[in-house]
Length: 190
Image 1 (cartoon, one colour):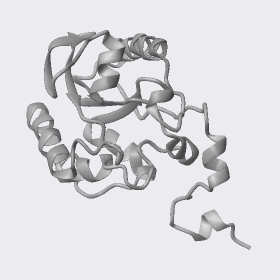
Image 2: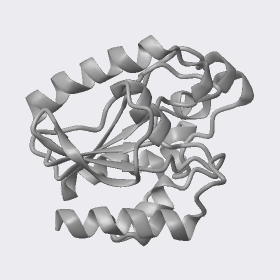
Image 3: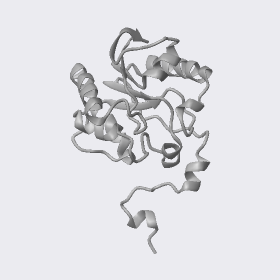
């Protein structure tokens, strides 16, 4: 008899129990040397950690935004995240601890995350580090505020962009606005 995994092409959808059990877990980076853009999320949500794929929660707009901004040729499912590497893009998180909301993170976690990220950036040397969340970027760098788009400072030699968090919970930016901002980054890295 064939296993369910062998007969089903549908990605695994975590159960509510698996989602609840994901609290505090991390998720693997999708990284490689000399990326064009290293996207930096705030931290994995519980659904993402349970699924084991970045931005996996239904309703997260990261993957549709990447497609609409032409970072990918088609809409990728989160389970296809490693395909990003073929085009020179990667994903990591500022804090690699799954929580129900980013508000559960302590300020010290953002600072420690910045230090871990600095080591990755020095080692991997991406052209651009794109932070997906203005508040997280400000917490990590001790800034009172930031503007969307390219920043004047560099981070370990890489250009820095700050973009809105693509979470479906971020009502301040609807999909068309996210796409416009991501397209600006895409044009700047082509």
